[in-house]
Image (cartoon, rainbow, N blue to C red; front, side, top):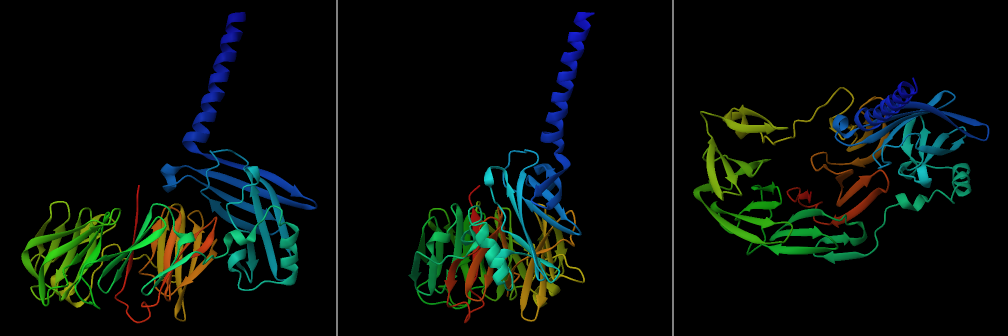
Length: 416
């Protein structure tokens, strides 16, 4: 009998151990708990989403105070722990209702959130503030450092039309900017100018990023070309590759797919694929076959006549709805772009509920958006900036030529 009881206890221990492992490390968790701060009581729903479900491991929260619910997420690594919110700071007056969640070990991976005119904002991008709200912030400055989310333009370096803010460079993020004689590469803590052309070229349409290589036609030629330049972004090594075709400059690039850059030649009515590994070009489309088109790994064909009338770009077929001009689904969030006057207002919402939006920033160009890790790079006027939850908005560089030449682009690459 004693052996049976011991065996039962051992089986029970194994059962609960396996249940814990499966629940937290295979299924995640969905729990409710309360936090009190003085007279204020907050009801919290905490959901751990594992990487297999949303591409990254993240936590989803619903924090309710009376009739107001704050919905937010974080992908900060809390090692799959439970009940990770340990403290809540709260402010309310006739204009604002604000909440600052403080996580384990006094970690604050998100700026304070405030409802203002029925829209949720982070404190660093509130349209306006008040003396009362500022006084409240002073009372919590022992745990909350508002300057963490402020833009910083220190340690600037100027090269030609570029002003680089070196303190805002992200490690292992490589940025390529084309200029009139080649490209600049921003990496680590500096900017390098890689010269490609003998004289200024103001319009370059045959160009693009293929993995870690920047590819551009040889614009030293006049009407057509049979040579590409490739530049390794990580070491700035330049190669010149001759192909078997004379390709007209009257064309455009569709984009990159795997190891190739695809482009349409309007003069010959052909589509070419330039493979950077094989260092060869192929005709892959014409008036009979149409052009190859890739949208999120899906291959289709498009009539050549249509491709001559309109520039077809890979992965630019944005999802839209009646409220938003572009909708992206990235790492457990919707990113929502809404045109208001001449600017796009940008929001994000958890994929659990698209209606629970929080305002992020404004941009005047939705074609120059890059999602790298948890960063969003975007353009606004002459500036290229990025946003990340735990640091807010930072300006990476300013290019005074952007206002004069829409053909100038920038590209992002990150080391895995």
